[in-house]
Image (cartoon, rainbow over all chains, first blue to last red; front, side, top):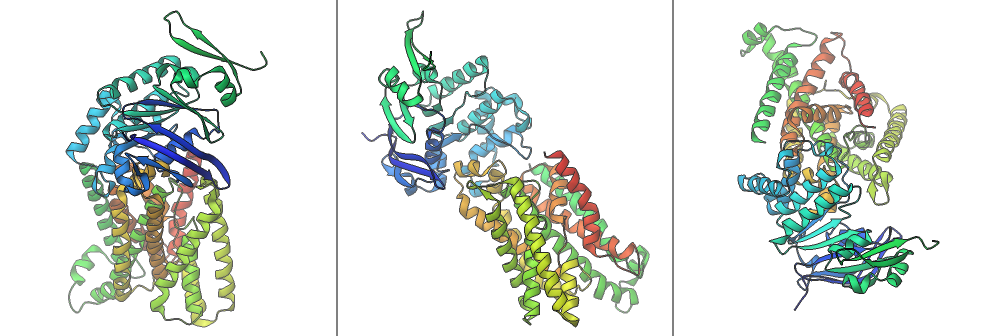
Length: 261
Length: 323
């Protein structure tokens, strides 16, 4: 069986600054894989290479066994949706128009405007509980609302792979949980593959099927949360000590603490 | 979107119609609407004045205004920068320098659009290279790079001007100050294909530019070939700018003002913004040229002075609003 998505020896750099250095990783259909690592470990760059935002200097990403470069950009954009960590909107744009952009890879001249596009965009907004925001200016939304609107866009895009770049950063606990529940809900009936970049170790342990642990542009470990999120690995990846505890519901929790304590 | 586009187009066409009437009437010989109606006969003095002088001038103003406004709108979306404008970014200066050097070198006036286009392309490439930091165009650096480019091109133009003589010096002055006074029907016909070509390309890229307006990474993630699109849009807006400068010299602020006003009215969908800006840009420059003729008639103000008098305060206001 070929994996849905596979990275083989992927390297990338920004000018002379290396960001990824030969990363191998495999992603199966319907998996939720957490990509974990400290700041500057290359996790966001890894998503950007898969989203074809940043070119790979070496190695390749394969979609169903074919290198991404072998597909037209528009073809991979129909299958892979990217949710940025933050967007700095200079010009005003209605939320509905932002969600409609998800239809762009499906439309002639990237110009999505048909009644069908509109229906799909509205349905996606409804599924993400942001239908009421349709006419609002997207630059005036809260962090939680923005993430939901972008998730609606990924739905409208009908992509089978979602690349989520730190989707919970900057959210308060309630909005963080609501967003994660929303992701779980809308992907449940679609067998969506999710690559979730985060530096929240405990979150990765809780929701991921598998974890890819990055350190300085290299894959340090790949496997189930139990295999990868061990005190030794975490010390290596983050330079922190950690305790594995079991909470009162019997769930495995990871509690990191500073090495000096 | 369709309703907004229809409303925007209707409004812009109405403005253009008013500007055209004003443009035909204003000037050293002031005409009344009645003169215009009466004079449109085969023998009338008025008819000759209108047909040989004012109509070509109004038409040239309209085309030049259209070029500058659409180039500005496209650059603003491409660079995700509301302050982008062919004049502020030094593209117009590069175009004028290219055209002036060709003229001083004694090349035929027919190549001046090509020389202006070359200057515009070189200038935008240089400005973009200067403004690049860590692989992306930096907003502040872009404005600084435009400032540097403008200073450099003014220096070159002034140097060439001071060694040029007679007719060449007069031509140089025309490029430096911007003027629509030498309009002829043949110039209008020569400019039209450049406008059509540049506008058609940019309109075809309007959907992609909507994605750029949210960010370059956004466009890439949605399947746009970013580098190729950037090159094509830069070339098309340089073509429009070069053509405008070759026939009318440097006229600032139209590319900044018009897209802003139009965006406020119809929103930031480039598929609507470009056509409405094209017509509104035509209206603005026809009106500005009419003001330049009428304000101190029979003396004429440089039309660039009129657009700058409106544009500078608006630019200041934009700077204050976009920290």
